[in-house]
Amino acid sequence: MQVPILYKDFYNMKGVIYFYLKVLLSFLLVFLSTSSNAMVWKSENSWNAVWEKRYQHWVKNNWTEDFFMNEKKPLYYKFAHDCADAVYAMRLVFSYENKLPFVIHDPRKPGKTISNGKTRWDKYPEEKRVRKFMEYVANMTSTKSLARDTYPIALDDIKPGDIYAAPGVHSYQIVNITEYGVAEVMSSTTPKAPRFLDRIPSFPFYVPEDYKNKTDGYRRFIQPQNIRKSLKKQPGYSEEQYQIAKGVNYDYVRFTDIIASALGNKTEAPDEKTLRLMIAMCMYANDRSVYVYEALYHLQEMRKKGRKCMTRREYDNYSTPSRDRRLKAFFNAVKNHYDKNAKYKPWTQPQRWAKTLFSVTPPRPDEVKELNNFCMVQMSLGEKYFIPLRDLRQNLAAGKVISDPHAPLEYRWGAQRTAYKPKCKTY
Image 1 (cartoon, one colour):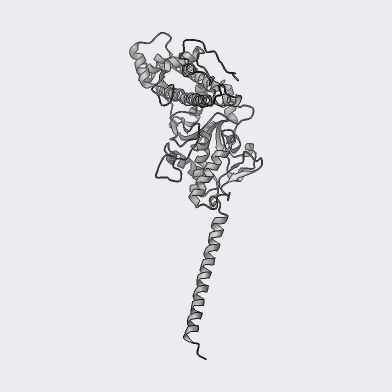
Image 2: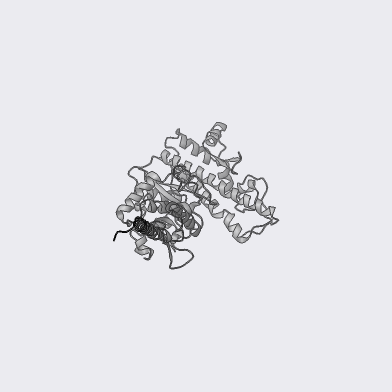
């Protein structure tokens, strides 16, 4: 029996419809499997010694000051960060770009972890998921959480990609080891904001002090497969830095000299070291202006709302006693270095700067001008308001620099003529 033309068309159309339904179903299955439960990214490699070396090379060559301010990298462009966020992001970005696992402890849920396996952003495309994950990690972590996600290492084992952590205070990314054994660093600051990272041709401005708990100091990220192991069982774990720091009475210059001798293949000449220390001191002193500005801005905003004095927590957040003690100790340590080497090439520029900075007798006007051309300390961000480095050193020595965040700007830098009388409670 011959099928009428009309029925032939119907059967052909039915086959076409069936074919397209089959294709659509296959597409939906693929979409659902890759989207509805999509991880931030799928791990295709595993951390090992080879990947750690690649990570070190990547940090040295690719982790740059403009990493979050480069429009050619839209995924990372204008990512808001503070010092700890930048540290975590360094490890996270490399993990993502090389499809390695990223796993850290969840600070809010003991025994739980945060990883690239999270699926809470599965409705977004991959790059959006990664950006959301970066922001999530930044909001969940801090300099304090670094103590659990990293572990202390031997001083002669410091590599690019390692970090320095001072929990509750600051953290640095180590980005290079010079031929002189200097661990160069980059860092961000507070509050969270899109910004360029600061690169400093010097060691972190800290000496590990937590001899008891070992939460600070030079550290390395825990590999994901070892996240459940105790810190002491991590490869390369070492407590020597705490013993060495205690042995040199936490003297910054003596401590960093030990690191340099362990890591370097050349020895700095005294004037070269003077130059490095003077640059570091200038940058550290200017870094204080950020903290002073933040305190004064917070105080201004607070008083607009009718509140005169900070709470204990606010006071702790915005006061600078530990930073000011370290700055004073830094000046003293550099002075000790200069005193021992004052006769070494005294005509060189770094030696002349140091002589002017530490001279007991008033230096000549031309010497003061030379030092001021090298370094002036900005007292307030966004303003042309500076204090000479020599004046700041003298103010610190005289106990005139005020750490109280309620104090007016001049008092914060010791540039006042009268004694500071606090009107709010200090903590």
